Structures are given as structure tokens and as C-alpha cells.
Amino acid sequence: MSWFVYSLISVLFFTANNLFLRLLAVKSENPRTSSMVFNLWGALFGFLLFLIDTNFSFSFPAISLTGWFYILLVVLFYGLYERSHFYVRKEVDASTATILFRLAPVIAFFGAIYLYSEQLTLLKVLGALLIVGANILVVYKKGSVSFDKNFVLAFACSLFLGLGWLLDKRASSFTTSEFYTALIWFLPIIFIFLPFISLKDIKREFKLGSWKSPLTAFFNVYGYYLYIKALSLGEASKVTVVVSTSSSLTILAGIVILHEKSHWRLKILAGILAFVGVLLLK
Image 1 (cartoon, helix red, strand yellow):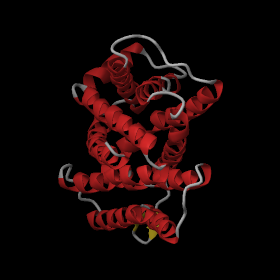
Image 2 (cartoon, rainbow, N blue to C red):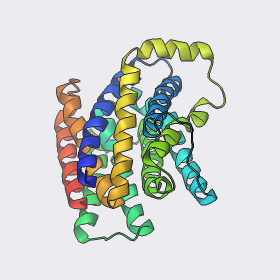
Image 3 (cartoon, rainbow, N blue to C red):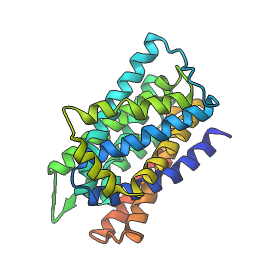
Image 4 (tube, rainbow, N blue to C red):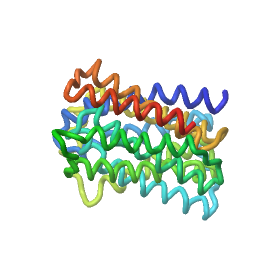
């Protein structure tokens, strides 16, 4: 399949993931423990993906020191993101959080232009400005911009996620897509766990997550795997743009399916701006 087909299928997986993450985060008693449980499920699915690719053998691919440097750098950024994004999803509704996270593809896009020497055009600059404008619009309330702690945390999550996306293409080039996916899901668990999470809390979150937690992790792992496959075939700036449209779908789905009606006109307008921005970035 082409990079575009892989990207479109990835969009569907990530949209489902975003909606289920909101449901999980709202019911969570401890967001960091929820993230721990979610990533344990993700590590399991990632490992199964690797085993299927290797016909259930345990011959790990050789990776150079340079490759491990980039992989561990990506692990650091994703670890910081996974440690904190459940807090954002718990406190901010899905459609709003999704728009705030739109900074991530902008960071990844312009970073890819520089790091991978990909083409920059006036339309792409305009697209980035529209996405930033959508982020400002969604926090605009009663004549002022509400830059509260949730906004700051969402911005930090976007930064970590964007840097992870930026380096995915370089880091994943040192090994197979399947093994890379397994590593990226397993290793960040260390950052989430530190300094300590009790076994009792983990068991409670497993029960609270029920079937939703493994299903959500499944959507995320295989969406991410398809995204990595797309990166191996296409330019990082193009793949990131197409995959990021999952957020625009989540905004609309959050309003229709989850009945998140507050400030719905601003959300739709911001969603339209973000979607147009994504098209221009392409």
C-alpha cells in the first residue's frame, strides 16, 4: 500500500482512540496510573505485533548506537507525553483537548522541513497559522484568553508529542516498523511509573478500565504502527499532516457522539480552521 493509504487507515484508528481515551480519562481515579495501565496494554499489543512479524521467534534486530540514541530520545518525549496527557483528557473535554493538541503536527511539520530538508511553501505557512489560530480560539471565553494550568499542560503535551513525531521517521529507520512500535510502547512505561505506583492502584485502574482500556490501546498501537509504515514510504511533513486530520474528526465526533455541547460553535469554527490548516500544510 502507499503512504497515503496507510495514513488514512491510521486516521480511523486514531479517531477511535481519541474518543475512547476521553471516556477512560473521565472515569479514572488516578490519571498517571490510568496511563500506566493503558501503556501496559499497549506494550502487550506492540509485542504481539513484533512476534507475528518474526513468526513468534525472539531474534531481536541489531540496532546501532546512533539508532539507540534517536530511539531513546523519542522514548523520552513520548514518556513525558504519556505521563501527563491523561490529566489533560480528564480535565478538558475531548473536542477542546484535540484542538489544543493541534500544535503537535505544526511542531512536527516545521521540524521535518528543517531536519529532513523537505519543501516549505507559503500555503504551508498559512496552514500553520490557521492551526495556531484555532488553538487560541478554543480557549477564548468571555472576552479573554483562558491560559490556565490545563492549557499550559496541554501545550506541554503538544510539545512532547510534536517532538516525538518529528523524530519518529529518523528513529524508526534503524529497525523494522514492528520492533520499533514495540519499543516505543514498552520503554516509556519507565517514565510513567517513576517514582512509584502501587500495585493496588494499578489493579484498581485495570478494573475501572474494563474492556475499554485494552480496546483503546489496540486502536492506538495499530494506528501508530500504520503511521510508522506510512513514514517509511512518504515524507514526514505529508504523513504527519494527513494523520493529524484524525483530530478534526474527533472534534465533530465529540460533539455528536459524546454530546459535548459547551461552546460548540467555537469548537466547530476552530475545527474548520484546523482542518483547512491541515489541508494547506499538505
